[in-house]
Image (cartoon, rainbow over all chains, first blue to last red; front, side):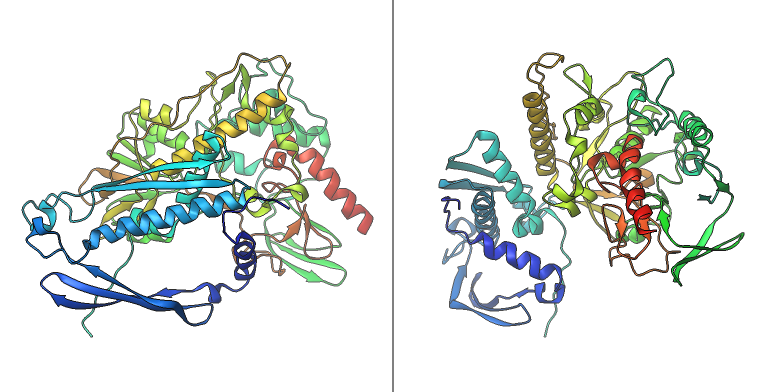
Length: 182
Length: 374
């Protein structure tokens, strides 16, 4: 048995992969967040329940997130801006991927740190220039990883993590979105 | 042996004009027929492949019934009933050797491409002259996609290549053809029953290779040098605009890492072998900002070519041995139905199975099994 322990239960993931190969309906998850306007551009979102493995599921605890705009946007800064949440999601998804792939490849990690920078031209959201998009122009992630592995092995971990990342895919590929008024 | 057209039919009718084999001549061999021409390091044109296979048909004295198209195969008492356009047959055992590339795979999103843009697949492509004037979007960067992109660019057209996951290889490494390395180092001898992820090995895209007299490499850096624009994987069409993934940099990084790992295994194997000095290849260069959308209505592109893979056609096979993804269920060529066998599929029994020189060992093993059953 390997003594490598990054705290990821890879065996459970591999077992799930085998089971779900033959049961695609159980693999259909729905993630949910509910949001409530507070005041100004400040809102709070709560995440607690989701659907998966054919049943309603509940997180151990509900999590609440505040979103607002900073003072330079003439707002009260009660929380991070919505577009910053995308950076949080990307960083945590890629980090989870690095840890999982490392565990699967028998690579012991000591630390994974990353910085994520999204370049954003706000003339888009302000309607100041119709040629400028609303979202990020580009995103850069920089990893610093300390592990019992060569530079090439670490690069391969990071590449594989991107290949299997839900958030990386959601940000780098278009997603069909429906917004309705109930 | 039933052949729907003439001997070497698909090489006569389903290949573009400039295509050459990816395997050098000295390695393009069939049982009892080695290459004996003047250019062992060259690559056969499709015409030369046709001649080679015709010659093999004579050497092997194979009982070919040409011009017989099989329209249905179904289980019958102690064997199979084979319906053809020239009457019906009954057989006790049947070998499916109808190929892996009968149909071009086109993604569903092709339906969203505006009607004014001409679309075609590699099976309908012959050469640049058949295309309307204007830019070409080639989708897919495996062997077919890179070859068509390069040919179209050299004909003077603006070409954009949409690149997803791909396999990068140099044509020549340390003075030897990359297929020499695959052949000699044992990579091509890896067996289907010893490989970690067989499903993935069977789905592996063909490497970015071309067979030319110059023995040149045709990786993405070579295409960029020709003036071809690279964009990410084709993701969607919205209101006439093609959308591409922003993940191009990572698929290139994955391909570079995999190529370097393969070359490192070659180096390890080659210690003391008669090969050239160590060689390194520049990482795949990706523009700082690749275009994420292209307006298909604006006139920049007259044509989209779907070089997005091929698949076998088993619509005539009325035996429940095809999985929901259209792949034949078989174990090293022994199909999941008594007396039914397959040959000539990728990674059928070895990595070598995709190549002409792979058929000899595969056929021996499969026919041994078949003969024992009979």
